[in-house]
Length: 283
Image 1 (tube, rainbow, N blue to C red):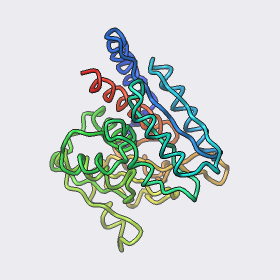
Image 2 (image 1 turned 90 degrees about the vertical axis):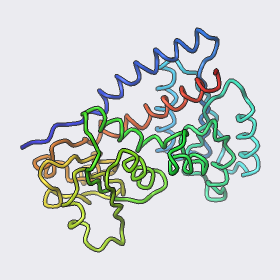
Image 3 (image 1 turned 180 degrees about the horizontal axis):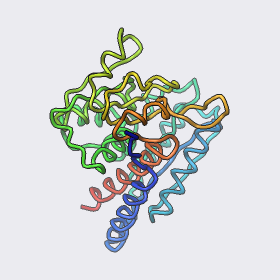
Image 4 (image 1 turned 60 degrees about the horizontal axis):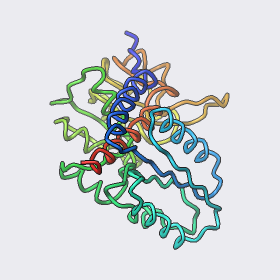
């Protein structure tokens, strides 16, 4: 058995067509969804991410503002700028690109963003809403993973899902989203004594640790669904995930590739969150 690919590029295109149509409908009411992206410093990876986010917005008909600041900007100045964007009626979503320079408290900056504009889903209010099942913005990467499972018609009810990784950005929110869909969820991490024993029980495995070959074929139950959130480079310098793709695809029923899997979905869900923030503001 060779796994079917869950194509993030193709699914993203479908969802972005829907976003563009809903954006047009909103524009007809006089509201253009607006996203402000704030970049502090000159981290090369962040510059690429930010450029992709701005382009995706423009392609879908959203209004986007990119604000770049020097790495020596003070935390007070950044907090003041965030507050200015909170007050701007033309901006519905605010994204402060992480990581921030070392002299800034990233959590303090995130908490300064209005929960109504927290389209990254990192605010403590958004995390609380997810945990309690209340309306709020879901973090974009795990939200994209859920859309991928939905796209293959996968019913999570009663399934055992194993999440490898416990970050606030992917691992923890991913576990809560799976739980909301009635999966039985196990979270594994660097202190899990026998990772293989856990993953062999899993119907769904989400890997998000940022380390190559964390999941190999001998760790996967035949027919499991594998979502690879990792982004690494192999010995030849090519992009790869956290999963030994060539091995695991011979055991799994579905698998996401890297690149072209979860990555495009992250930006797409950012557009969805920004659009929904604008629709809420318009109503």
